Image (cartoon, rainbow, N blue to C red; front, side, top):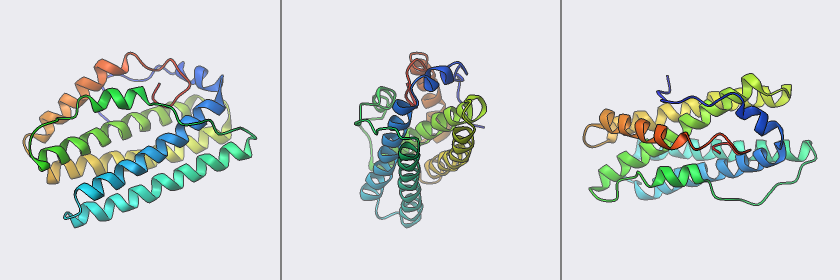
Length: 192
């Protein structure tokens, strides 16, 4: 369903389990960035009522996930680490088109967002199926379902409001993501 070219090695979960505090902190900040991304797209595309309405829902859901992760960190007696760079997302950003119309910029921003949601969904599935902690397994299963919904929403809007051959550009995104994801899966972060 997600179309990802490379799957995460399930052994990545061993790295995650070695430092749950770090991965939960990283996850929390990923949720904040996802909410900020949705709000930025609203600000840049306020004339598209349907898009604004759905992005408001996504921003709220991402902040609810932020709260859920924060509550989990507190419940487990862990300490929230400071935010750090997400190198994976920064590498994806390099693929965003820098020229063209506002509509092309929206298309690429929606595909960029769909890409991140797709990889997050895939990582949450790996965690839900392989992590030993039953509470975290259930937690990541629930979030996997939500991320899949966000992925399809972003991809659907790109196809509806996009400019040019959106399906071809999506394939380009999938190829690019495959070329960079080979460098990840070695750290206790959601995308690392």
